[in-house]
Length: 382
Image (cartoon, rainbow, N blue to C red; front, side, top):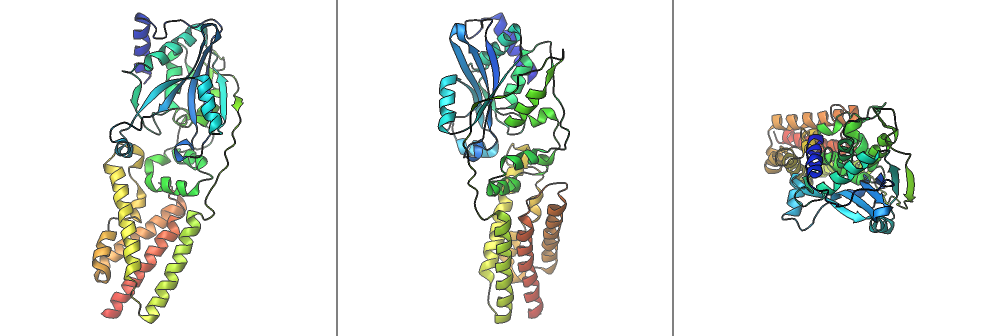
């Protein structure tokens, strides 16, 4: 990334700066960090770069988090990890009006760059805003609206380099996801479901900066190689007024409720001779559909963080076999799936090598109960 940005900078210096006018001595460049919003795509916040030059009438915000709903096959491209994001440029006034309307906080950190570095950053941003350069392939953890500002600031420094403080505690990508979804447990469950083992990678400082607030914190404590701080302390430009509206029933509570209902129905049905095939069809069918989603995200997309998903132990493609065979399922196949359910519960409790959502325990137990009931029915018929 830095090599590409450096080449773009050199090309733009050789020709003419796209903005046409060099920045004045009083120009200020800063990192903007925006708070979470009410939609899932805004839970993690947002980052942008502001360039302000009063003498030349410039007050722009450069935003790498823009996408176009009119792109061909937008949702399919998003699902497969092939969606292009782009750099947009907006006036600071309009940018703040949008975030004020969304009642989201905005913080600003002035970057302690000299005149040449500020000019470099401006040229890089304007060059990247050209139609042939503004689009890039979005990657949530490795190339997004926060990593792009990090990289362009790094490239603008030229000979100087930035030293970031490494995190003291062990922080994974999933830990950051958990922090952003603290008030949205059903979204956390959904993300836990589709995110595989790569999400449990322990991050260094540079990797953590995929999250805007981690970028803000690490930039605030970073120094240049001459000992000068990279940025001023963050100041609040706009207060946030977001309130979490989480569902009163958590996935864990719903899972245990389902478990109790299925246990009661299974015990009652066993005594009274009820056919509970319809319950098995719902449970096994749902498990199979979830497995298809996880397999698609693993093998059919460019999302590296949905690979090696151990949720396939409980949301297994074997459920199709049980869905078709019903009570005639082979005993050894039933034992295999029950072993996989037990493994999923153990992994959920120990959290290694993948952290699985706690709601998987009652879900796995529920499926375990129905498989046990099938074994019991098969034994009675023999």
